[in-house]
Image (tube, rainbow, N blue to C red; front, top):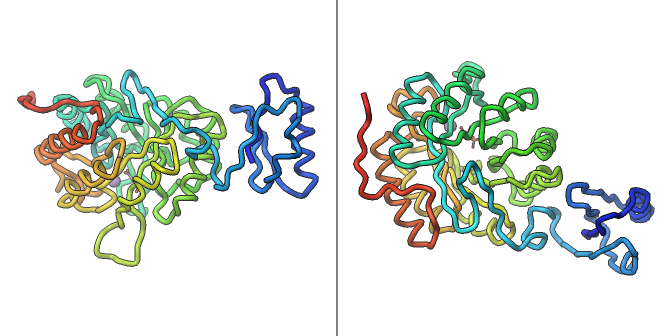
Length: 345
Ligand code: PEP
Ligand code: MN
């Protein structure tokens, strides 16, 4: 049940209600930012029906609550420095897997800006499977992507891999990415709930939808409502592709949750050849945005080189994305048709 409390409910009354529920050996939690009590196992609406401080009660079958459509019927929208995300908006996030050097990130930023893209991605701290591979430039990388973004009017999306880097990532980013490997890092998630910075929560590579939405609840329950989900493929039995991109999860999430959902076909497929078709499939499935790995020279990319698009392929993709997103009634945060793209240098 969700018990919605009246505005000025005194603390001792909240404790009373919690104690009352817990008497039966059932857990209950006061969620302060929303002024409500959530108990997953308590289903009795009668007991607090006439309680003077109880505004309303809602029975909800799902284990996740705050991320559910039943809790909030309106689609969540997020404004990031003037750019809207969610509902009927469509956004493009693009950039390299990792920030490698000044030339790479400034070159990418310049190109994205010419295509009117509003978000640049790039990891400064990379969660690599092998400790013997490039793990990112760290703070130097963050400074580079921030400077490039500021020069070319872009917003920064970068990954947080550890709690001790939180302040640093908050300072340099506009959206904090939580990667697949940290989707179940619950302490990290609850800390993100306490900050006022949008979060893009990728799906854990072996997460069920329920687990993913519970992870979302970890962030929401701390009071941070600026949350975006991102499908990036799950692990399957079949090694033929890097991941099994779950297009079907997009309409599913839209029916279960009010949160915006993006798709990352770069990690979803692991192969640049399939990024175009899977991007368009994601749009048709209802995605609110895409995250695409783009590199000035994909074969030279220090990480994920196989899946990165070069500039001209990305431009071709962006054209199709714009057309299809508009066909489905979305308003794109970029407008590239009929532009002449030329790079300085
Ligand atoms: C990334 O976006 O660079 C990344 C590491 O993605 P994921 O967490 O989905 O593997
Ligand atoms: Mn990558």
